[in-house]
Amino acid sequence: MCALKTQSAIIMQSRGKATVEHDLAIPSPDAFELLIRVHAVALNPSDWMALDTFARPGAGAGYDFAGEVVEMGERVSDWAVGDRLAGFVHGCHAANYTIGAFREYLTADSELVIRLPDHVSFDAASTLGMGISTAAQALYQSLNLPLPVSNPTPIAQSILIYGGASATGSIAIQLAKLSGLHIITTCSEQNIPWMLSLGADEVVDYKQPDAVQQVVNLVRKNGLSTILNCIGTKPTAEFCYQCFTEPETTQHREYVYAPLMPLSTSAPMQNSLPATATINHRWKFVYTCFGKRFTTLTDHPAINGTWQPCREDKQFMVRFYRQFETLLKDRKIDFMPQEVKLGGLHTVLEGISLVREGKVHGKKLVYPILSCAIP
Ligand SMILES: NC(=O)c1ccc[n+]([C@@H]2O[C@H](COP(=O)([O-])OP(=O)(O)OC[C@H]3O[C@@H](n4cnc5c(N)ncnc54)[C@H](OP(=O)(O)O)[C@@H]3O)[C@@H](O)[C@H]2O)c1
Image (cartoon, rainbow, N blue to C red; front, top):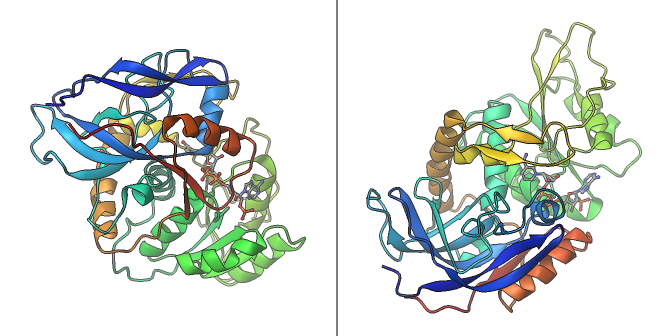
């Protein structure tokens, strides 16, 4: 049992405003849940986007965390007190202060967390949750690629990962490489060495005026039918569509485009494929992996509304996390560079503003959560 009874957490007050609240009850885990003492949290663009749009007053903020088990639900058998883990929770969701990662203690589904090997620090692990989950849904559910393994056999398939220097892109490059694919990615010039170090085979600076042509030249012989767009804006979607290329010798391939953000328009986009070709557009919302019903209120038509529980998405993520634990144990994953900021939950609020203002590039802001004693 957890000896402490109360905790501090970041709670939504009104649109765009959240504060650190104290003396909040520490929840008890349900039968299949863990109670976790949070050791570190990391920031995502989704933190400020949720605060500024759909988060309701009273909701707990934050997604990504790493910590240790302090209590198990009565039906949990494969975790023990003190086990180290990382993951993400559905922060800013519902007017419920017990949900959210920016706090001292949280409860999480015991199947939907990632066991950490000893060599992985809490700070590094806190950067994983949302990034790997989003990348995994896109690569393995939307694009249907083979699951990653520690020693992959290369397959004759290229993927364009647009926006490789994003948090999701940097993990997607590594996962797709461990799935055996040939990786082409785009980023700003200064990030090219980083992309190559993650396993990208070809890197194109998307700011060059002939960047689309550079990608097409790279895939001219075997074609390009698989694209993950880690940015998702309209200009980036137009770039990606122009990169789809028919192979020199074969025809009738299925073309699949997976953006991390859907477009709010369904206007057709220009591409150079034959008129008979179809491009399947597949977007997934990462929160469906929790397997629960939820409602999102935004003015984006593809995101707004009530999402029904999806058992298949949860089953996929549980399976993927077990696979990912092996990759971590085998030291196959490089972490996003981290800037560790001290000061606890109060400084998390400052960090959310920095991300909102576009002042954070090529790294994750990470905050050790220091204030509480281990019960
Ligand atoms: N589907 C889902 O459920 C889901 C879940 C989580 C996140 N998302 C979305 O996924 C996207 C990526 O999130 P993230 O946290 O991975 O991003 P992030 O780490 O904040 O990405 C920042 C990087 O993306 C690149 N970039 C930014 N704007 C660009 C543009 N207009 N064109 C090309 N590159 C650009 C820049 O790389 P360079 O420095 O190389 O220029 C920048 O450093 C966001 O839109 C987020 O909302 C979706």
